[in-house]
Amino acid sequence: MRALPMQFEVRTEGLAQACGNDCRAWISASGAITSDTPRKFEAFAKKNKLDGATIALYSDGGSVLGALALGRAIRKLGMTTTVGKTIDLNATDNGRKRGKLQPRAYCESICAFVLLAGVERRVPAEAR
Image 1 (cartoon, one colour):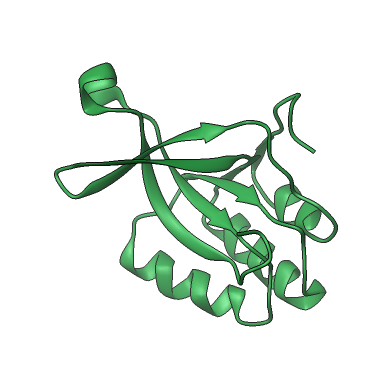
Image 2 (cartoon, helix red, strand yellow):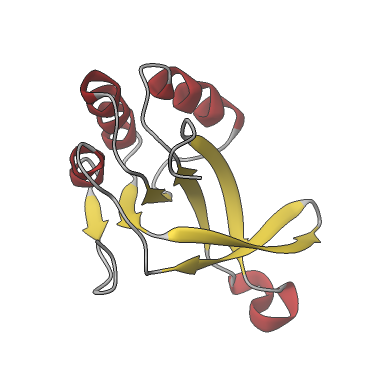
């Protein structure tokens, strides 16, 4: 999954019965950063309200220029960055895809520059 080009998806934590209306949501960003990644992210951002959202990174890195442009877009939206692998729960709630965020994840190489772009940065102890 980390070797494929980076994909962006909105995920809501857990099952609706567990957290009701207080379920945490995040943007899953998994895969290699390419020169097209910033353009794909901008298109994704236009379709979703991302201002101040959390983006969970799971990547081996990739394109330096792509990562720098992605980082600028993330900073412009005032997003929080974290390292985390999204695990799908194969459940939906009113069209929202459900999942859980696993802290044992990787943000390697130039991905660290994207991580640093967040207005807040959270790195779990299990992350690398």
